[in-house]
Length: 223
Image 1 (cartoon, rainbow, N blue to C red):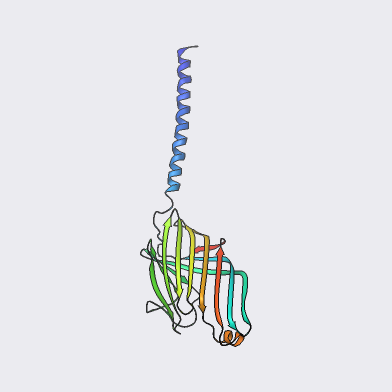
Image 2: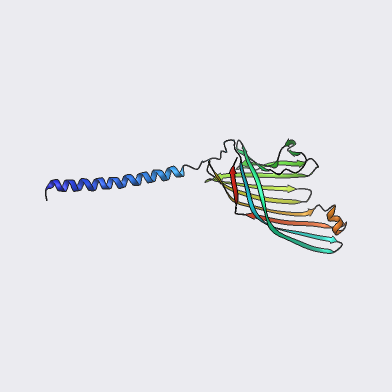
């Protein structure tokens, strides 16, 4: 076989290998670009996240010293939990859009919605009070890693000696959001029994309750 033929075959193989290497490099670059698509820090760009969680809940109400003795009632069912999340610098405002009737105060200032303030990697506490005098203390923090927003919240209600712990998880890539999970648990050791409660069970009634809510399905939108 002539030397020229060997040369052509060699050049063809070299070009073929070069083409394979080029394809591999392009694919690697595409993978790196995809990895860089998720922001390293959370920035809502002045917009808000709104999610609705489809929760399953269980609540146990325990009564003692009633006219009928001591007993426990259990409720199970489904409900929806709506939450609006806004951003102010490195803090998140976690709000319940269904504000109870009356004026709401957060740290003594009138606001349009009730909720907490979550610090980035550190806990921020606020005092929330309804005009009628009902008060709650809320402490929250959040993290943002690998496109996942995780918010933890602890709420204390002095009137009921109640502590509630919540956790929210959302996926956010800068352009779209997705609901991941929601959990909530409450334990009220001295619930406030008055009105209908006292008339139904007697004036010496002691009431305590626990409740749990979980959700792995829901919706999320950017507003």
